[in-house]
Image (cartoon, rainbow, N blue to C red):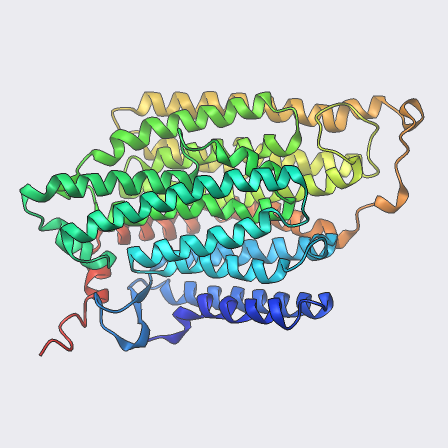
Length: 511
């Protein structure tokens, strides 16, 4: 049993209370401890990903209790790559928060940040549906604290909407788990896979109800239509580095859909066959259009970026809804891309807004580093919209290729192409207003002189450049990345290794 599997959960779980109660009055000490912890977490994530490169499934039995009675953490290719993605993103966000001073604008930022990492990593590693619910709650509590970090009435109102929506999702989650447990007698994901597969036809109706309830819960987390409305208000009003960290939050919902509807309710399961695609594909198409129209109609920069996240989730879930190994591998590539693209844009928006003083998409005198920020915005926009040469273009091509064998291929291609066109127009309008039209105005005209002390330093720009660099790396190494993700998707659809690894000790203690 490899004890490193539990480290991505235990490390932030131990660090967070120390930051909250021992280092809360010393920001320097808190920064050092949080940074060291996050760097170590990234190192562990790299090691776990390397461990999974050869395939196979690693299981950690908490308390040495065998599944399905004990709690297990499961490391396979998918969970390893998601933990690695989280750790790399958290490094960029933490650097930005420290360099810009966001972490010092309210109390307990670093403690909440570590609790957030604990919840995200736990959700990716757990092999139990009930503990998935528990880690969702940890996520909710920590993210609400981060959401209202720095205070303000608008932020508090948006945070309240976010909490109410997620509490409704948590209630539905409990109903779904109760139905599933009453029907199968277990909530261990591997054990569920076995029992749902062997389910007698008389009990199929209840399993289908549970599957639909779970889909609604995960759709809320992933911000899919018609439960996507919480995201624009939440992300647009959150502190920018927090919004950048939230780029991984919607991916927790996508991950849950991928995990549960391949391992437990796979395409070959008679009880739920076809039920997911019937709901998921139309929801993904509408989500894609809702995001694109939101980008076009946004009057502020932060809501524009939030709607672009909604649109990217539509594209991602369109590939997931095909539920074939190849389509899923393209979805995973797009998942990696869209996470870094959203993070880069939110981090850049924070730098731009700090110089402009607001995020209104109106012509104002140019900021000090107008040309430099315009170039970064251009790179981030073409990445998010899906223009060459960055990974968004390759990602959308892959997604379109992944769904080419589906009966709804024409609808999917039309949605992706039209959505991309509208998104490009929206970003072009925003970029023009922020950086181009501003050059025709002077500070003397408006009497709004730019303060020299607001000049952005090199350390503050590095996280944005690094996030954009990840898009370039994903483009350059698209071949190896695709091969790794194809193997990941194959492992998901062939759940025999996952089930046998988790239930390998199922008979222990029954003599």
